[in-house]
Amino acid sequence: MTIYGRKDLNWKKNQLFFQDELMFTIVPEKGISPMFRVQWPDGIQSRSYYNKTRAKEHCYELALSSINNRGIPQDLNDKETPLGASYARLNVNHDGM
Image (cartoon, rainbow, N blue to C red; front, side):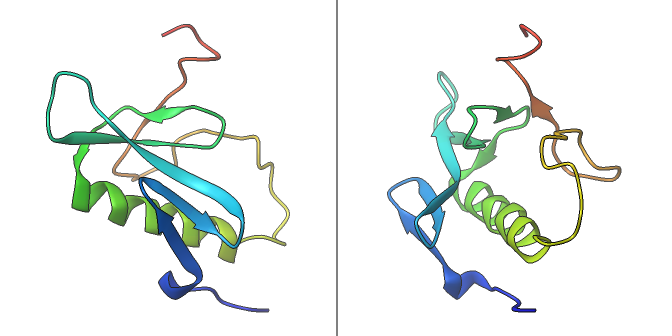
């Protein structure tokens, strides 16, 4: 099993890629400059917002966790926030919030 690190991820503007796969995007928070939210490829954004450095760090953590856990059976559509996570996802597309 291959273990991937930060060197395997690439930023293109505000988007983080693994090979050619978009993993995460950091999106400027309207009205709260210079803060950003983390956005998943399906458009769901984090509830919390971060400065740009912390937002990118958070993307690295989430992306590496995701790609290094591939092959482990799990429901990849489960978007529930893990216990003890420092973020909460805001699902604006699915729950109308």
